[in-house]
Image (tube, rainbow, N blue to C red):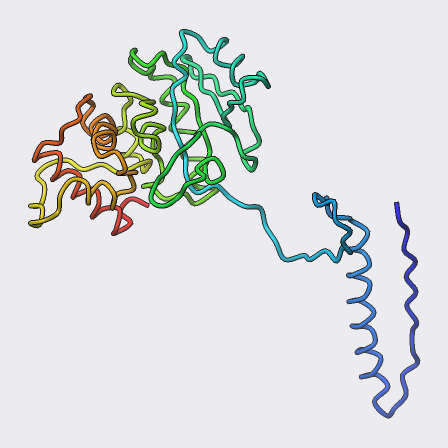
Length: 269
């Protein structure tokens, strides 16, 4: 480790402004000392190019702005944990919540877990870099256990407070990858989460949708990838109606319009 020797000379103060000069010299010496102390803590260097380090004190950690919810698709948590931690699987999440409510921490929250894959939401393409991924121990067809959801709600409250995540940014894997993923599935209690501030929800009566606003336009405004309109409609129906359908009803279009308005107004954030 490099050792730095710092010498500070003290000056005598005369009556002709010597005290002022001494204070100025003291401030300069303190600033130099701060630079030298900072230089004693080298930055981790990732580039192979030669670089002179001049560390700054002006930074903070990058923070996630989304939470993405998944189901494991497995019959038990042991198998899911094996997949999520095996290097050859190349898939991970930050947390897994077992059926009984046990919380398992897998990846540092500030690191990029591999849970989203190719995805899109509201203009964001690299969802892995922007999100926390949470896997729920569920085979995709069964109801979600109450103990599991209670743990999830506690974790979401913690994440929302620490990272200041907007209510609209708690979404499912199926929302960000329509046509490719369906989790956390039709049985997931999105309304229950939204009532606690994790996600958006609308119940009737709904406002009338202005003429000319079709489902594709509204889905895109809400955040969905509409390159495959039927897949986006299916994802929306799965999340907000709890059904598997590629067609949107007039009620569904009104619900979607309500959700777009709530998102635009920042409702529940």
